[in-house]
Amino acid sequence: MDEEQDLDPGIKSNIVNILRDKSSVKQKVYDNTFETFSSLKEVLHELINEINDDLTGSDRRIKLDYRDRGKFEAEAKVAEDTLIFSMHSNVFEFDREHSVWKTSYVKANKLNSYCGIIYIYNFLADSFKYNRANDLGYLIGRIFINREMHFFVEGKRQMNYVNDFGSQIINVNELRKIVEKTILYALDFDLLTPPYDTVKIATVEQVNTKIESAKLQTGKRLGFRFNSDDVFE
Image 1 (cartoon, one colour):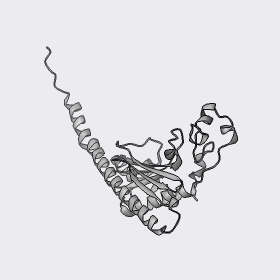
Image 2 (cartoon, one colour):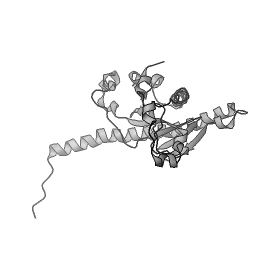
Image 3 (cartoon, helix red, strand yellow):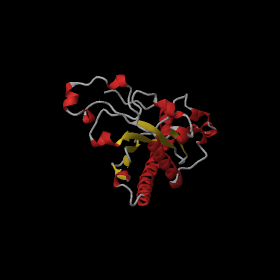
Image 4 (tube, one colour):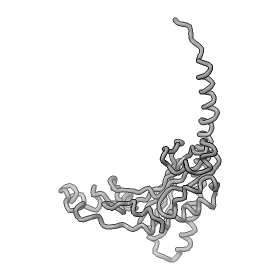
């Protein structure tokens, strides 16, 4: 058997430096993101309870509902909508075309760009109620958190503020603002009837299993360009 060769000192040094720098940063980012997501769950739950208290005496069907879906997910039912808050377990870097690279904060230190992500999706509540697996949900926002608890939100309309990255620390107050804007956006984002040509044909199977619970795809903007909602209002 050949004698084991020592690892090249330069390569070994490079590996050690990467582990000390980049890998430790990623671990810190994960911890911060998970801590933030746990706080977001509490904020979401508390806000829903507050809103429901204000709705006392109203139609019970318009009351909100919160459900913890596990370590990385939470759900809020808001009228006809279901909002899914989902934390990704990995840490990400941005592509070179992303506007985050233009911020002075990231230019000062590239390690500041590593972020964890919390996604916010908007589905129709009936999609889950009737198990319509092919229905569409829309990403209406995503929260990025880095090693220093700095954050920015990328999303629709008033939820988008990338240029502030490096100037704000994520905390309970900021999370509440994000959740409030998310709920308001979902309530303002109405279901539109799909274009006639996309639903003019149905199969016998779909009719036999009742069209409303079959595999006819339903989404708030089915057949329309969702990007038209990107403009601030």
